[in-house]
Image (tube, rainbow, N blue to C red; front, side, top):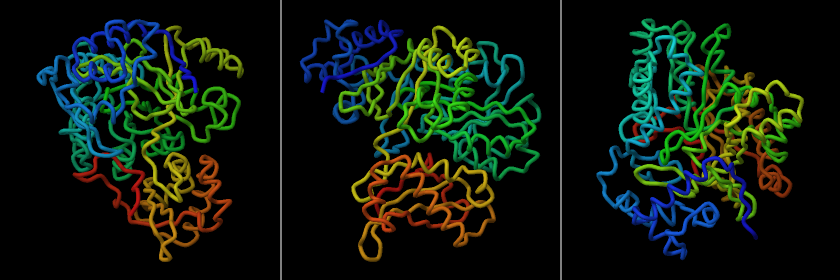
Length: 478
């Protein structure tokens, strides 16, 4: 099949420069080009899209970390961090001064628009995992850099420790005009669920690590006080490249309006989408993005990013689509949102993120992804009964037949009953069937045997521990 690529033209010249420098300076990239018989000295805008893709298999695990650095020199890396290992063993990633400058640029935009730290005194309580993990240290470095740009911001670094987070909130939170709590969505919600109402009131939220539903956002808004104007912002970031994109007020407004099944959602995401994707703005001059459909249409995102270990057409296994400002404005006007169309910045670019293709449970050889179930557990009607955290696991039943088990964490003080179990079996089955044609076929073929099995656990059972940084929605086989 002929490769089809859709990309915003903005940023291509910078991407070509990154590729040329990598071909000249990075031993691992020269080796990748040689394997694919690509000429690193002839890279230009017309040949860029024919360059080989970087993947975990053909690049990250095929070459040592030093060989992926400029000149093969390990001290090019100012800092090393590890990925969380959500799809396997952790990978080690370097960062240099360019990565820090990029992070400061992105956080400047985020804190200026969402959290007003140029005008107010702001305390950031950084509850991302610290130590070797990228989230906490990357956020700390980027936000501290905002002080040189005039932001009135201080940073506390409790990491993923609820008692420490609460101590910072109660100890010095009231010394600032506002407090921003930063962390992974399940952990942030857990902190707020366990906080006294007076302590959590008015807190603002910075999120990264995974997508959220608008129902989840609403539930967090209620926890901090429905009468409070809450600013919240979700980042799209990875250990590989730091911040890739971020929610603006405009993308948040559009996502609220793009209810799945509406003409706007069909135009923005595609008619086959059953779960609202993450929708963010990105900078094509710092993160050049392409969409590759050469394998049949999955739409893998390819990133080209400068840094200590340059990435050129790097496939992280996230799927999505990209829109330039003109395309987004046209979609909005076609759906009657002329005022919003006029508010689209003329040089902006936007990323629709559908999710990972390599994090799923296998059930009767079908890939079962967790995304469709988030809407079930974020339902406001269940807020007093379940925490919102769950784990999908594939296993064998008593008769050795496959079972799809959904482990469900109860809310604080909640007791399970058969009525709740029956409701969740039906709701989870319906959500999976709506969003997954493979599962829908299993239901048609196997009937009740394909229904999920609900297993309840007490609140706190899925809390992050020392060996688990981010919540794992998929547990694999057992």
